[in-house]
Image (cartoon, rainbow, N blue to C red):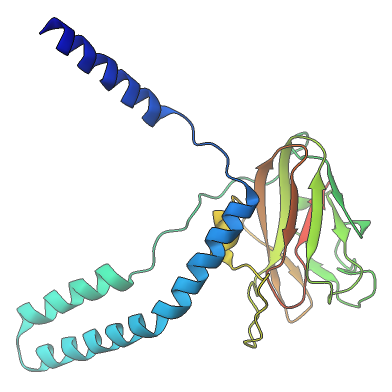
Length: 237
């Protein structure tokens, strides 16, 4: 009996220890494969979900008009359970502070000051029109032109990396490329949107640029593309 109790205690301790162990970092290749799989599932299920939502809404109206409020409420609960948007995937983090940013190598690019009137790309007339105070004194890796839609960089020292993504996020004209990642994909990869009163803004159709942060390790490398054009922009000091 004592042996059984001792064994149970050991098993319970092992299970608790395992549950409390920190999650191991996943390889970028696995994360990207999972994101592609989930996008494929979403494309297949989207028409079915839309039809189900439409039928529920019609049913709710019919029950309401017939005076069957109990049935209408039941349908409304199903609508909310199935189609209420989920909360944000990640919590936001604060604006960048000196000393916490990682050293990164972004190529090909030019290092430029993050200032109002500064070009977003070396071969473009698009400029920054609004730089919030939180980003005062920062620089950015300036791509050559907007048609280079992919940003590739390597991390040379541990720390936070800050990347600005255009609020356009995915290609809007339907000509979506396989290497384009959505906002959900970006957050699943660990990029957390900064908590800021204002976003960076450029004069290119008045686009806002949402700055996200990720704690990175030296030796990591990334390849990011969220739109047909307008590559993500890496912020540095």
